[in-house]
Amino acid sequence: MQATVELGRSIRTKKDLPLKAPLRECVVIHPDAKVHREIISMKSYIVEELNVRNFTVTADKAKYGIKLKGLLNPIVGARLKSEVKAVQEAVKNLTTDQLESYIKTGEINLVGHTLSGEDLTVVYSVGDSGKASGVGKKQQQKNKQKASASAAIDTSAAASESKEPVYEAQADSKGLLILLDVRPDAELEQERLAREVINRIQRARKKADLVPEDPILVVISTGSKSIPEVVASHASLIDATVKQPIVCNLVVSEAATAARSSLTPEVSLGSLAVTDEASIAPDELVITIFRRSCGSSETSLQSGHADKFASKKKLKPVSLTIKNRRTDESVTICLVDKSGHQLITSIAQLLRLTRCAFGWSCSAGLHFYQASRPTSALTANSTECVLQMRDVYAE
Image 1 (tube, rainbow, N blue to C red):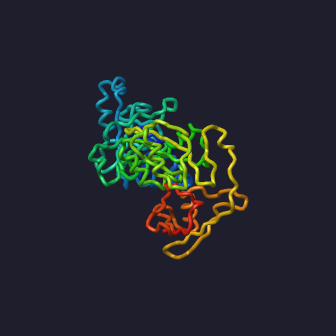
Image 2: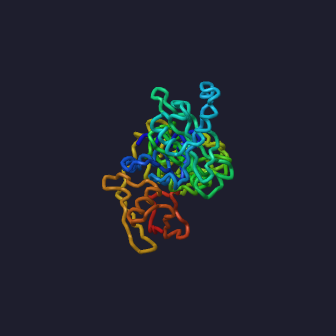
Image 3: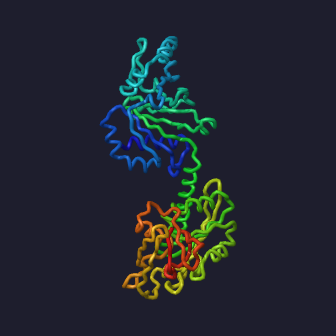
């Protein structure tokens, strides 16, 4: 349901949480089993749109310590004058059932006075404390005179350090309540940074008019400590999109030197494709992309749009046998087909294909070793020319 996504995004906006930042959990609460089935049928869409790791649909408010509280808005005092105190007292004593009825109907009668529209705001609080840090924004639709519900929770420093979920809630006038666990999470924050790095690299690629098949080498120049750490720790995630080797260094003026030092003898550094300044708050970085060529199998790429149509030397069919060190199984992978078309152009592609061939669940931690260098692992970021590889072991 689109309402689920909209309420979740409203929470993210209120808490200043960008969509690229993964969150631990989304809980959808609604009393109707039919609504549950509709929401579950769209689970994958909602999870992707809200960028959450866990997703729960339930009717159990008590499990999450949901409490409702009515707040009389100041505008009522001007209208009721001396009788406003009696109404305030009645609002304080409203039960959960009465407040939920008000949410659905948009109207309630207290001590002889009818409250509707913006007269009353219903606040959801989450947790045992029943504490709402600030009144949620009023979401009544004036044209329909309906009451909506908003929510707030205590997100102080002490709460953010808790190992227990810290939920922020948002509800609509039809009984749909969304909870997002907004606890800070170092692991999810690193994943967010990794996705930001991918985004900056892809932007630079687009500026240089590069296509995914163009062999390149990316240099990230930054004084940040966290960005190189993220590039190393989330190499598999980044490679799944970038699919090209990445090098980090400190100074942009030394980008070419850093690029050359990362290359193997079989690979040559081509021309500069683009230098793009970027930022991932609070850090500044510069993305430098160089073209590269792999031995004699590829024609050196020169700058300019005509590169895409440059002729290449026709290759002979090439296959590579890779042996699983753990099981002694072997697979043979075609690198160049009979027509001379190179099917595999990078270590990253070869890792993914090998993972599938051996039935491994992921390529994280998967390395290649060559008999000539049995202790030197080739990772996804390696610039080793696949056509030059011989006697390869996977582990």
